[in-house]
Amino acid sequence: MLADPFAGDHQKAALIVYDSLVREQFDFNDAYNTHDLQSRILATNYSSGITLTEKALEYAQKYMFTSYKGKY
Image (cartoon, rainbow, N blue to C red; front, side):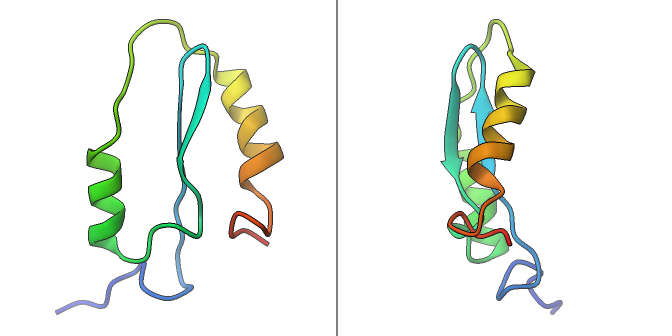
């Protein structure tokens, strides 16, 4: 069996979804293993309509890539 790449501090993931609003689904501290990460992604509700990618990127830069959210 292969080692879980998301167990420990080797790799981390975060997820935001966006349309006209940006919604944080989980940050870099919230998924502890591959199964947990996959479950959280599959449970995410996606909406259709406009996408304001610039807002999502600004949110990620300002709020997600911080030590508080698990990135150094």
